[in-house]
Image (cartoon, rainbow, N blue to C red; front, side, top):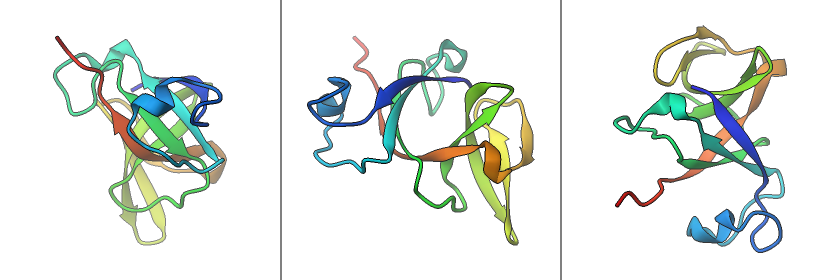
Length: 116
């Protein structure tokens, strides 16, 4: 599932979205992405969700992670297999073993937009 880069996650300084996420402190290594319209509106992750991604967090089993695939940022579920991480794209699509050079961070917070 494709995500769109919004910018660094610095409360009060860059993106006003950070203050609406309900978090007061974020690492300087965090940035924001918005889930694309590929997600639809019925899944665990929905179109318009804003994710805080920490590029310095270690990748663990069960994490949501951002990988760069074919010059696009994409959202994956991680599955530890021994010392490797097998990645399954959220919403279907690519499955692969993670390569360090493609890893862009772990999702540490998610905010779903209010649906009226």
